[in-house]
Length: 290
Image 1 (tube, rainbow, N blue to C red):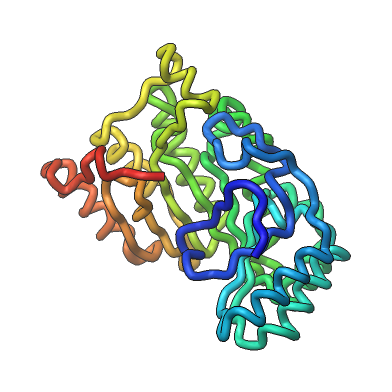
Image 2 (spheres, rainbow, N blue to C red; image 1 turned 45 degrees about the horizontal axis):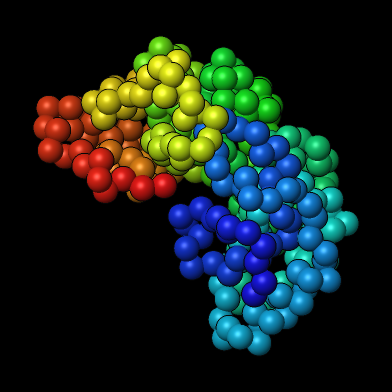
């Protein structure tokens, strides 16, 4: 496989074949993110993509999952995506799912017919970084999307048969905004009702803009105990009517939580309360990672 620059994928795609269909991220301005700073967004030559897939078919006996890189592969038009998906379907009959990162605005730009066409062609799930349910926080981190756009994008994808895995970041609002962030994120999850929610905890590369906010004191980081309080408030404000897999077991998290909402909500809250009383349950700072 040929790759350009650093390659990123969600933790759940650890065993997937990674194929670059775009280079970089269309937005690439979030203040907390360092993922695609080494490249400028462009659409990769479709011929190169198909050549890499053909190489993978010769090299790997069985490929059950394929993840389309980079930052938001759904920015591609269906005219460019469908030939890639058709090649996968014809040459990797054992492939069980094709997934990609996406921005909600990518989803909203496509018609329902186009999204159903992509689902029929093999895209089963998209990963969307919402980061926060608060419009104020979204502005502060220069997300480039609003609360309502994020909700609408997830609901549209889900309605068209494409599951959404939505990521939020604990501590992203700092000490001044943690309550607003927690409440608004909980109500956002309740409104969008995604199939999956992933909760990470803020870790900062020294070269990203938000690092300067921390150095100057404009953003004060939460302590591990305060992160627990924030997570507790988030869960208390999350009220979904259909199953939503909730995971807070990323390497960045202080406390690992796993469950399905709404049925496991009380059990996860009890786990948080136990950790509040016993700080020994929290991951040591030395073992956290992005």
